[in-house]
Structure formats: structure tokens, C-alpha cells
Amino acid sequence: MGIYERTETASLSYSIEPQLAQAVCGINDENIKVLDNQLACDFFVRGNEITLTGPAPVVAQARRVLNELQAMARRGHVISRDTVKHTITMVSIETPEGVNRRLAQEIVARRGKVIRPKTRGQQDYVDAIDDHTVVFGVGPAGSGKTYLAMAKAVQALQSKAVSRIILTRPAVEAGEKLGFLPGTLNDKIDPYLRPLYDALRDMMDPEAITKLMEAGVIEVAPLAYMRGRTLNDAFVILDEAQNTTPAQMKMFLTRLGFGSTMVVTGDITQVDLPGGQKSGLRIVREILAGVPDIHFADLGADDVVRHQLVSAIVDAYDDYDERHHNRKAEQ
Picture 1 (cartoon, rainbow, N blue to C red):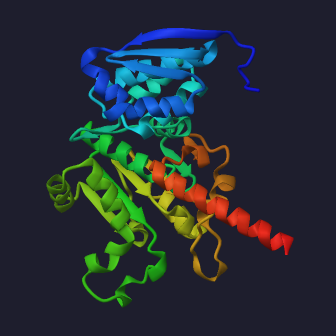
Picture 2 (spheres, rainbow, N blue to C red):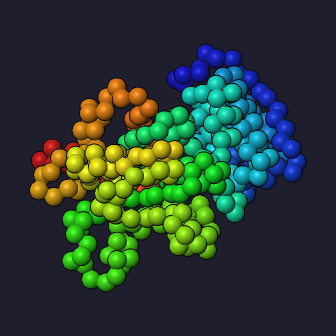
């Protein structure tokens, strides 16, 4: 028995603007197939007309999703199967006004690629960065905590809200004793800072990044290089903060200067500190509880945005582990 069994069946004819039909429906109607798989109603496409049939609440939900997809297509966004899935999720948990606001909020756009929050948790995180001086983004890999912080930093620089961006990470594997490694300073720190460079290149032209780095407008450096400085008029990101000691975390936070925003990101389940050292990220919430203008944003599994094939791979491994565990239990 379905949960909508006793609900009245409804049928609705939905029209898409002819010039937007392919963008909304996808090649070979692949986006409509996603809708058909995800929602408990039937979709019949003929040209730019879609007939929706199913339980009335689901048909209403499908109509809201199509409205949002059409609005995104009208703004020139590329609509993928993952975009359709994220839109369904947001429509299911938000009022129509809330969905429209969240989906319309673009942080950075470059060469047709738009960076914006894709889940409610990500939107709350971005809102917190707008509203607070210091924000901690804590969550698992893939939840967008670093990527969205980078996008907000680029947005702040482009809008002249700050005059520079400073990106930093603890170089844990080298114990921050970079002098013992071969090569130039750039050779030594590059492996630890490469993920930050990669994210930055998604948001800005490589030539512009090089010029801004040469001018000191963008700085990417290990955490040890922050000691003794005061960071004014800057957007400062500390990534992989779970690998800071309590003393390093205090050192970083006290670098805050006038006109600056700080975002600290990390995953407290992935601590790589040697010798059983305490993580500064794990204890900082207790230390700073109640301090004004500081916000802790907790991102979870629902905020992890993966390519659909990656999700399928993870699910397959989870199924394998469960079967393997059950076999061992039976032996």
C-alpha cells in the first residue's frame, strides 16, 4: 500500500516556455526521467507540454519543482540530473518562497558555471558567513564547507568588501617543519595547499590568480606563517582545522584584524595530529560558547553533494560491507 493510496488522484498539464524546453527536460528527457523516478507521479512529455498524473500532493510538488527548474533555465543555468535531485529535496523541505530565495542566490559565476548553496544546511552556512565575523564550518568531506567559504571569499574580494584573501592550512604531515623538505618554499608547501589552489581556479581565471598572488591580494600559506601577524581588511580561511592544536587555533583566531571575516573549516572525525595530540577544532566550541559574533555551522550527510555515480559507488560498498558483516555473524 502506498502512503498516498487514499489521496485523490490529480492530473495537470504543465507548459514550459518553448525556448527552455530542452534545458528543463534535458537531452532525451533525462531530467524528466529523474523526476519520474524520484516522485510518485507519472510524467508524459509532448513537445513543451508535460502532463502530470498522480496523488494531488505529489502533483503539486512536481509542479513546484518544474517552476524552479524553469526559473533556473531562464537565468541561463545548466540543469543536470543532480540539479533536479537537489531541487526536489529543497522543494520538499521549504516553502516555495524559501526555495526560490535559496536557489536564486548565486555566490560566484565564471564562464557559465554558477556556485551557490545546494542544500538547506549549505544555505544556512552561507547566511552565517554573511552575518558573523567568525564562522566555523564543521562537517564531512563533500559537504561544501571549504568550497563555499572560498566562493564567499572571492565574492567579498570582487565586491571590494575586503582588500585581500588569505588561505591557510596546517601542514601536519611535515610537522610544519618545512625546512627539512627538499626544494624551494613553494615546492615544500605546494602539496598541502594544492586543494585550496584547485578550488580557487574553479572560481577565477588562472591568469588573474597569478597576478593577484604576485600583488599580495591573494595569499596561500601554511598556518605557521600566520604567527605574529594582524590580518586587517581580509577574508581569511583556515582549512583542515581539525589538524590544529589548541595553541595553534588560539594563535590563528587572535590574528583577526579590523574589517576582516574569518571562516574555519574542518571535520572532527578526520584528525591526523601525531602522538595523540588534542584537536583545537574539537575543543574550540566549548571555549567560545556564548562569545558574540561567532557562529558554529554544522553540516551533515544531507549536505554532501556528490556526483550521482559516486553516490552509487558508496552505496554499493555499504551494501557489500553489510553483507560481509552478516556472513561473519552467521559463521
